Amino acid sequence: MPDPSTPEALHAPRASLARRILNKASGNGMFQPSEIPGLMFMRLDEPALNSCSVYEPCVAVIVQGSKRVVLGDESLSYGEDRYLITSMDLPVKTALMQASPERPYLAVALRLDWRDIASLMLETPPATTRRPEPDSRAMTTGALTAPLLEAFDRLLALLDQPADIPALAPLIRREIHYRLLAGEAGARLRQIATVDTQSHQVARAIAQLNARFAEPLRVEALARESGMSPTTFHHHFKSLTAMSPLQYQKQLRLTEARRLMLSERLDAATAAFRVGYESPSQFSREYRRLFGAPPSRDMADLRWQPQAEAA
Image (cartoon, rainbow, N blue to C red; front, side):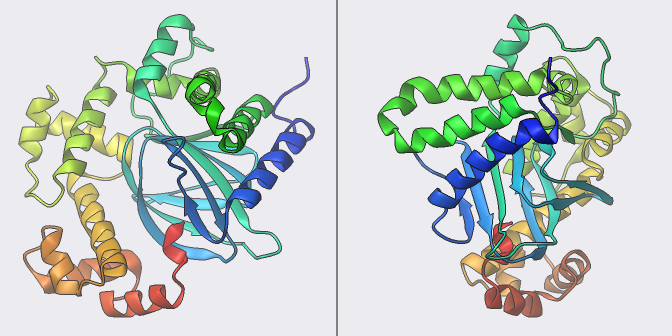
């Protein structure tokens, strides 16, 4: 049986998916068609070297180009031969090293549906008996296959057949989840989706932290709600995210403040207070440490290149 992950097998579906993205992407940026909730695709014609965002649980496929993602103090690079799975909300820094109008960066992503994944887990046995390491990261990559690319291609094709979306989009989404469970990252997805695992409990705590990141951090309360001691909770939290809970909250706050200053034109002090900082000077110090420049200079650079933050 031919290997569905060889360059030869990937060439045709990748070329078809690239054409669809180029036809739908009217310019630079991220596109989220309302007809298919959770679907995203991107086109960038210029490098974006210092972008920060919060990745939600999703699978992302680079159709053209490559990317470096920094999670905590760890760096992960992937390109056209691998997909990325993020299994919980994670604040990251990203860099696209090469992109041009002649060869733009192209990518597509789909938000994970945990109910669909849990349903499939009951119907399909694990692809391997090997279990993931208990302290595996919540972000990983897997070998891209032609069937996964073809499923994404068919999902984007539905944008030209809107009458078929209600009936067919859920089926294709389910197929994508099936391909992921059957692939290299399947064991990791199963671990996060299983309710009684510590990874699942930490994922629930992270969802709460994301919803209340501007409030004072109470690790003891999060640990208690997760059924763990503070020490055990801290260990599993850092194992999954490569950050302590405090570092995680800090990056969430700074990333949101950056978004507020860029999109709502807030000044640094107002943005700092909005995301939970009490000291503008502390905010400025930590902002510079994360983004490499103080807020005023960083905003000037971003507004000069408005598409950089889309990555």
